[in-house]
Length: 442
Image (tube, rainbow, N blue to C red; front, side, top):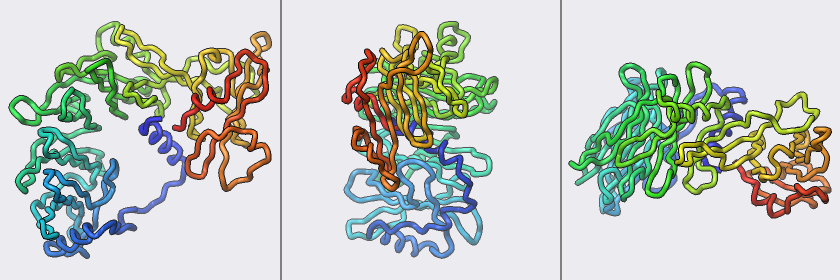
């Protein structure tokens, strides 16, 4: 499954653990991953006392070291971006940029202050030219949560500020056809209302706002922003947010057409669009929009209104419901693309075959890590024929004698996932291959 859902579910599990009251950055020194980083540290020592600073680590994204390297101008030599704060003065966060020379030495080319006290994220992107990268730094104020994005260009050995804006979330993708990328960004205006902006290169060669749209006035926290393929030569932006009035999660969808953001599903005073918007409401914060199948089409997960059928003695567990993955079909409707049962604790889902919907239930055995799938007798509403089992097994745990009858489905870390198809004459029976095809790790 896509990384975003996996990350959300993992964070949900971690949040149940007791908090650790420590600053991880204080316990770690920058890892010496190669000679290049050591050389940069030595070059820094000519400008500042390394004993008087504390390196700062980006909190999200692919770059998690205070030493970030990239060949931004494509000349075969690297640039290094280094983040730190002063221990003695207790001042704000700073960034130094150094350039690698042909002889292996490093030259300081930029030194400037950041914003707040944290580095939220570092990204590189071809926003203005396919030949050179732009540097994007998201800063964060830990006390207020306020974030600021700074966009820089790098040319002829000089770093120049191009654009600056406050933001809640942002992402970089090719929202429009071509070699250049654009930034989809959510920010709050002076009144506190949330706005969606699409930033990109304009005809005069500048980085500017290509299109914008107001988000629902009923939201107080934006959770997620995702690019999705809408139709041929057309992309969309999916924005998940938490609402004021009922605290539910909602999704608004905007299609990118010639730089404009056209609302397809939104909280507007337009009957059809608003009706679709209300169909996206759900309470579970782990149900965020995602590219489920890895084909570029983003779906919105919602819970089925009705629990699975059958009278199952599971008073200690909440009734299990199917998760419906819906998408916009461009005929003005939200359609169900997939149905699945999700085991968030064990980290997997199983897609329900169409013939199982309304006719199959799941008995969960947390003590053994096994989920049993049963056909439901339509007359008694009780489980009858067993159709499948899925179990999660730790390689460090006890391995019983029956594991050999199971099909190995997947591995993750110390966990192994197995499935079992009992002998049954039920018309709902599936093959081993169907079981393998319908199983997916989160």
